[in-house]
Image (cartoon, rainbow, N blue to C red; front, side):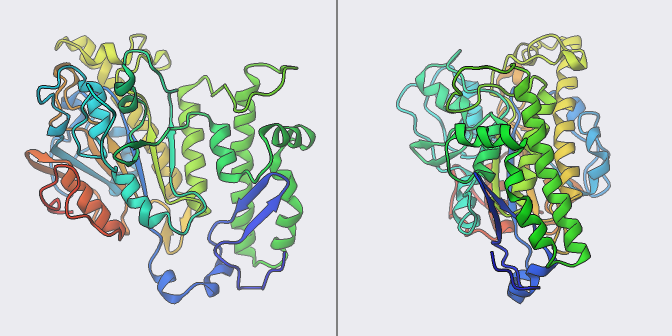
Length: 440
């Protein structure tokens, strides 16, 4: 590889056996970029879905405006409060039945990024979702157009063929093209950093050297000799972070034990711990943003009607069961504990992005994270006053506020405003949108 000193391309890659390692933005790349590109940081979008609604009392901040007070459910975000925008009053009326019978849960996740009513008694058809509209522009120059991941495996339990499309993904490239959401960290890792060969060949390389990254060690040393001290430090930290994620994936895979059988075409194991699984996926997304491998990701943190329990925080009941609390104070309190715990995982992602330099700020400054779900009060299968947070994006909009909107304001209005802030051409209408959301 021939490298011109102080003129590295933003699209420089280190290539080894079975791996392509994209690089973070280095000072040595700046002269190779136009002045316009330097002055306008890259915008990124992440969309994270939480299932089974919320308990509104502990969730909604008691005050509005710039100096709002964090509510108990949002208290894990205290360290990044200045990069948090809480939106209340937004609704998805297209998730209502409209005479379509049962199916409030799958309709909730289907409508969340589309604003389109999901008919559950016919062929699966929806609309292009917010993330994919953004990816059409933001993903033009990246190796991976968009990344879709999940923290639960896809299932056909509790849903018919059509419902399952709406329960197992929140990302639709077209009205008839749902995108699968990948739960396996190894598959995501190899999609981001793998470079040809079969899974078996990459696994053989990993067994031989301990890491597929070892095959780029010589190139890392070579490029380091051309960089200044600051860039060397950035590169070492980045490669170390990639290696740490790979090591954690290996550790998770060892829990199933070594086997002499032929390797399957893809891993069948994920971390046992929900928190470790979430943080592995978050760290992969941070690395993908840092190396500009992708600029758009969506995450299904759990499917609607998820039966997951959280004994690690003292909740043995299933999440979905608790969401139908029948206004029982004890059950509502337990559901609020789950709400807070899920928010704490968002806090981890925000702090990781905040700690990662990007241009004249951090990745968090230049990334908009949309966090929320398609159910408000789950006890009533209500799709009004939805949980909705915008995290990050200080370089794109004013942050650190609680904004309260009129009851039943279409959440799809937010989509128009988000696209505008990201610099993406804004459609005239998305779903049931009526206008751009005010005050953002």
